[in-house]
Length: 265
Image (cartoon, rainbow, N blue to C red; front, side, top):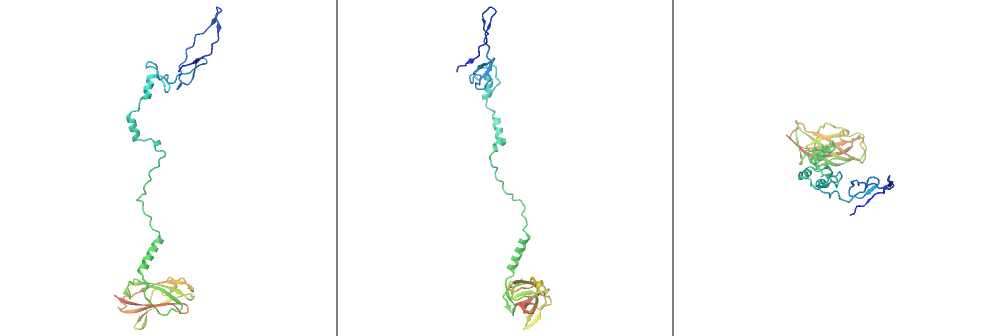
C-alpha cells in the first residue's frame, strides 16, 4: 500500500534578495492510530498510516504505547499464551458469570422435619370408628315400642351372645331409635327378667335427656341413646334377660328391647 501525504502549500515569502523563500519540508509526526486511522501532523498535515506498520518494525525500534503496536516487545507480549496454572485456577474456581443462565439443581426435601400432630377432630373420629368396630349390633327382641322404632342396639364389650357380664365392671349401651311422637322428657327403666319375674336393675342416669338425647324429642327424628350398665359385685352368677325401655311424658315406650346375658365372676 502506498502512503499518501497531503500537506497544504506553505505561504511563500520573499527573500531579502528579491527571490522567493521556500521553507524546508516539515518532518511528519508518527501515527498512533489503531489499524491505520488518520492522524494530523504539523499544521494541517494529513497522513494515512499503513495498517500493522508498527507491528512489523524491527527489533531496534522503540516500543509503542498503543494496542497492536510497539515493535517486537509488544508483539511478544500480545502473542504470549497465559501460563497453564491460570487455566487450572480458572477450572478450580469458576467465575460467577459462568453460572449465569443455569438453573440450580433441585434441592431434595428435608426428611428430618417433624411431622405435625393430627388435629383433635381426626383423633376423635378414629376413636369413634374403633369403638364402632368393637361394638357389633346385637340380636334383640322388641318388647313393645309403642311410640318409636328401634333401629340398632349395641353393648360393648360383648363379642359373643349371650353377653358375658363380669361382676364389678361397667358396659356401654348405645341404642339408635326413631321417635313417632313429641315429648319434652324421657325416662329410662332397666329390669332383669329372672324366671319370669322383673327385677329392677338400677343405672347411674335414668334421665334420657342427659343420655345423648337432645330434648324436646321431635316426631320422625332419629336419636342415639347412650348410657352405662354397671354390674355390681354382689350380683349372683346367673343367666337372665335384660329389659331396657325408654318412656316419654305419657309413660309410652319410645323403645323397649330385651337381650339374654350371663353374669359371671
